[in-house]
Length: 113
Length: 112
Image (cartoon, rainbow over the protein chains, first blue to last red):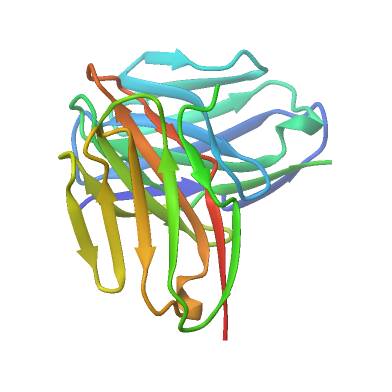
């Protein structure tokens, strides 16, 4: 069976500090991978997605970036955090076929102070 | 532009009541998913519907996909406090998009 991991679970960082959130998937090959941000327990905002190693699509311009160094690893980064980067960050994966459901990780709660 | 509109946004009911939440769009979707999310956790997939008019049941939850594949509903019978959570619908647009379109969710509270 497939599992998805995210770490850290919670993070408190000062404004201007760097960020690195990691997501890994087990039990599948060549998944599509996604990063979302969720504010105040409401809808999901898609930030980045990847259909393969080194292939990143950005959905919104901001000071975040994503990388996929390995098939089942997806990293969300920032060089300098802003207060507005606070939120709940979710990683998700999907079988590499068009359409279809996504499966989410447990999330990372980021608070920028 | 919000392609999937969910209603109501908030719903607070007593244990044992029935409820229906809606997910509507002017766009056609090749499939639609419903998720439930509890505070501090990731969304958990409940069901996927793919055929217009399709009805799926998961214990006390009944999901329906509209005939034109533009809308969906989730009906809960005899709600329990364990049903409390944020219910999200998400659709895969026709044409094989890599992305899902998410609604903003319905926050359900079932009081004992």
